[in-house]
Length: 251
Image (tube, rainbow, N blue to C red; front, side):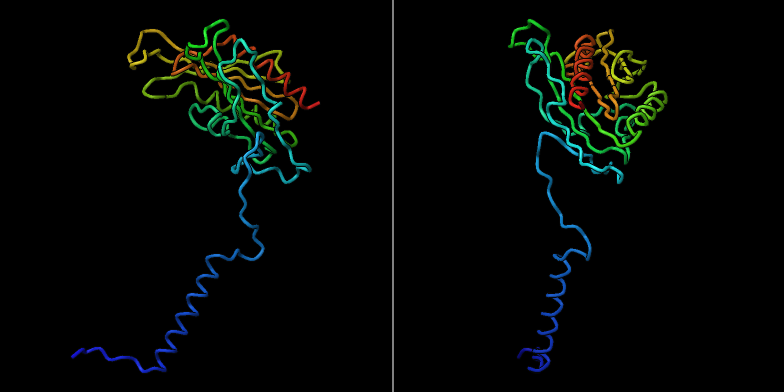
């Protein structure tokens, strides 16, 4: 004979009612938004992007800023290996010793990035690209753009070298005259390696350019293909064309 003794019917009904009340309360807690909170939304994918979550728009910004695709530089046909494409800002920004280029702060009103893949002029289409240039655009409220450049200069001076994939990368910076309202050029140099990772005895290098045009800052990061050197001449042309493009967008 079973030793289990069933509960009286009245106690069973009370227990079931109590369980139903607890379950209902739990369901309401899991799905209902707290009082005064904004409903969760998913931002649509567009060609332009607003400020990243870590740098919310300035409370004093009176209008929403949109960065259109036309604000980004486009390579001439003879240098263009593939059309420009949208890139997440956090992937487009270079990193040295830390997050030197991601210090826009709360005065950032919008940010967006695109990447262009380039080739040497006259090369056949069957050849591999020579490199890629990531362009990031920040718009700022107030004096945020000049403040960004000031913080960046200080951060770069504190990072004369860093380790990357087992190689020591040295960093040198200088002013880039005649570009926008102010501009900075950084050169990274590291031991050159072959495709199988062996050192060749030479050096490789690539450059980063940062320019301010009024309340907008643009960052250009030149990456040679598969770890090879970038092309300083192409980067210089892209930077100057890019600054003119931003200036035309702002008018």
